[in-house]
Image 1: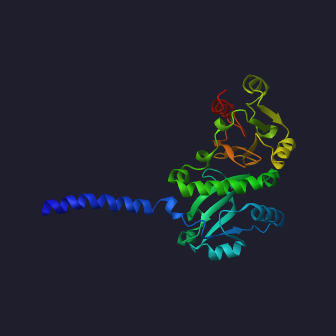
Image 2: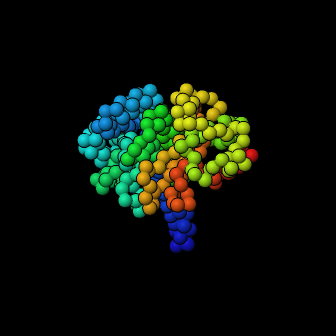
Image 3: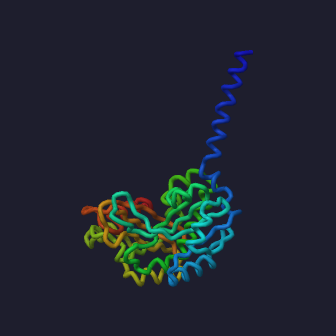
Length: 283
């Protein structure tokens, strides 16, 4: 009998442990996302809030939503009846101050009493420099809204998506190897100079000025991806640069990487990004 009890326990204990692990996964924690209301937190900046309202109204489809003020967020944040989409200024550990603005989706709950950083984060998407936003974030805002929703949906379906971040949820160039890659000239790092481009850019890669790149984005140009780079205006020790390629028509994210800014690695797409893209495209 004692032997039988030990055998039964040996089977039950791992099952209980597995069940506990499943309960604690991010996928399970956000399984109610589509059923709960997402509070879109307004910043108090009338111009920004007007654009955010417009794009949320036009493009938010994954859950019920309501707009709220920062004061209402502070009051409601500890309730697990809500999710919150906030515009926050992020600061990395070694930075002197916040350098990048993020659109951040978090779940309400008791952890919020310790601040936003303690809340369950679903996704944070860098959208602009804190000190001197270029204004391009308004052109790309419809895509940002869709990227956040797509990543959230992917995280609800597979745990690995929720833990690996946006880099794990990019579309493949294999679907369309002849996609036109459009880089705004301001989005290329200094090391991607003319000699490097002459050797490594092909007929499906072009560099245009910022306005032309934004026009392609705003027009929903098909069979194209457009560059978007986010970095602090004045990078300090510990600052990061984020690089994205976004499809203007589908708003799919095709490329997402970051690097630490240094004397060697400036702001924008680096040589290594271009070489990686060529490899992904089979070139």
